[in-house]
Length: 45
Image 1 (spheres, rainbow, N blue to C red):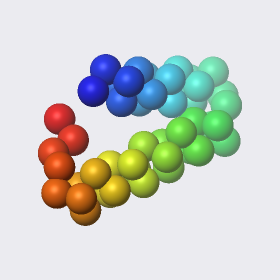
Image 2: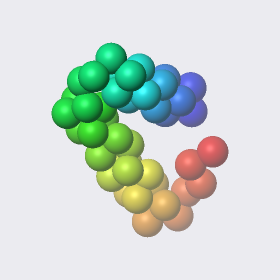
Image 3: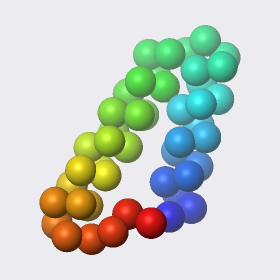
């Protein structure tokens, strides 16, 4: 899940730069993806 980790890092970097709106959207997408994966019975990591 290298892409997952990169997205988390991107959200953190954007938040540090002050772009909290985009960081929040990325985190929301990560959360939705995580919920979808767990509902389908697969492990995320």
